[in-house]
Image (cartoon, rainbow, N blue to C red; front, side, top):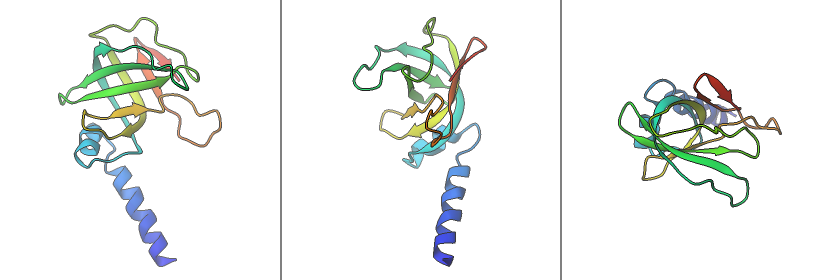
Length: 129
């Protein structure tokens, strides 16, 4: 039981250490995944939707650190951002997954099963979740 408690505490500490403004940079450097993150970025590229399985709206943001991250927003569970353009500012909260290109943020929506922390996107003052 003592070992289990230590593992849980370490797990909590490693997730907590990514909280704050540099969370994505820290997660990227640590090659971490399954980390809840929030940040703001500027749209540098709007990609075609991914229509394989659940549909996802996709775009690439550049963060203030210069790092880029792909946002993959499930539009079967949350509203699409219809008027998104290069240069727009997007705030987000979701789950970060590491990859060599800067990472992906997904779970930017509510979880209808209530098993995962809800995420969101904010564009022009409108919250999408």
